[in-house]
Image 1 (spheres, rainbow, N blue to C red):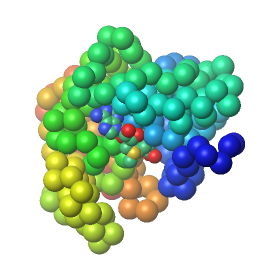
Image 2: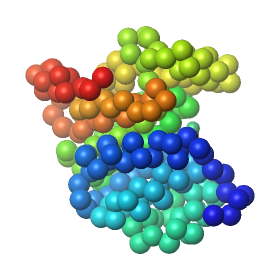
Image 3: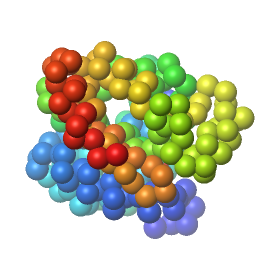
Image 4: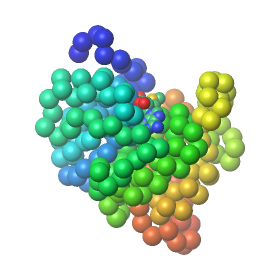
Length: 216
Ligand SMILES: C[S@@+](CC[C@H](N)C(=O)[O-])C[C@H]1O[C@@H](n2cnc3c(N)ncnc32)[C@H](O)[C@@H]1O
């Protein structure tokens, strides 16, 4: 891999644990759309490890050079060249329908309108029963899960007051309004989580039943 390509140690650290969650939730064959692919390391690794999955990385227009170069070098039949997708201006129909959407470390970067647009876009692009896997740091009931996450939140807010670690309670309401039910909440290394949302019928009884499955 040429050295000039941007590279993330965090991706190397978290890709194995995320893969275990993907293996449990993805169908053997199907389409996955990735939002905010960044360096493309996740896209390459997951496409290599999940050969039945067609992986479509995306990121904001103008930020695709690194992921495009990595995709070219990888030469994987099931990994598509990256498409531009700004989640504030998501043309859902152009990229779907898909069996799953994956996004890592984006919900705390974009503003709240962006998070709302993310959930709306995901609900629009998923096939019925499809899943949305959202990785990153999250808070619960207004509380951070670790002092390092509290510090990270303050750093994000200092850089951009509209950014910051999101509360799972807020995301759960957002999801349920779009028919996305939080089906699993998996602890990840370094105080991160993978939240697994499933598109289905949003009924109060379903929500109560599924909440007992949360692993936190
Ligand atoms: C912290 S990086 C995470 C990158 C990668 N997913 C990872 O885990 O290393 C945040 C990503 O969100 C993308 N992003 C920021 N604003 C976005 C937007 N409005 N629409 C789509 N992607 C966005 C950035 O370009 C960047 O790739």
